[in-house]
Image (cartoon, rainbow, N blue to C red; front, side, top):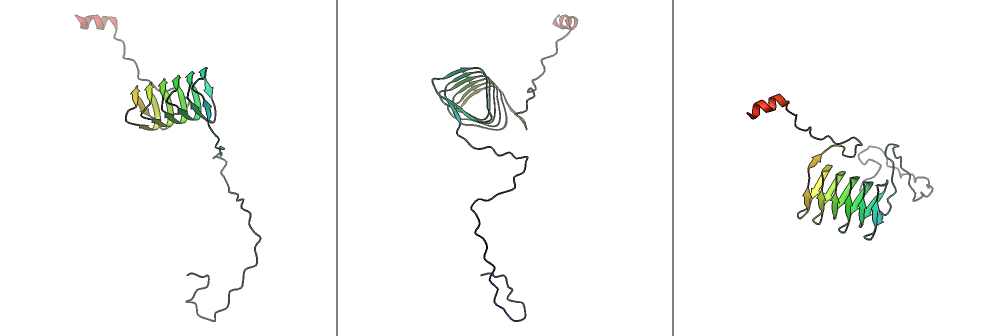
Length: 171
């Protein structure tokens, strides 16, 4: 339908010269990847089976699927809490999917509570999804960077009244 020569050009038409034969290209293509975007090889998640109880903190750059019990904090790239799992501690991950029970704070860029989730604690997130049927007790706070190592700001306690002012107002 389209060709490199323009039909509307005046002058004699010549046969296009065949291009010289090119070397066959390999199937392997290289792309320039910026240094600021490290590529992470996608591997299968580490699975903690239902009969396993871990006492202590867990930290990894990879993905974890917990089906057992963890008594401690978990820091990972992606965390899936299975339906039979119980975690007592803080969770920090880029993506958190809760199907089971969590007692403690959850911090993640993407947090999803499924219908079978039971969460008792605060959730700090960038995006959140809570399915119908999920049980949640705590507060939800949106932050642009919930994974920041800084401590989450808490509300200031009520200011104490001076004793003289308190006794004068009570009369």
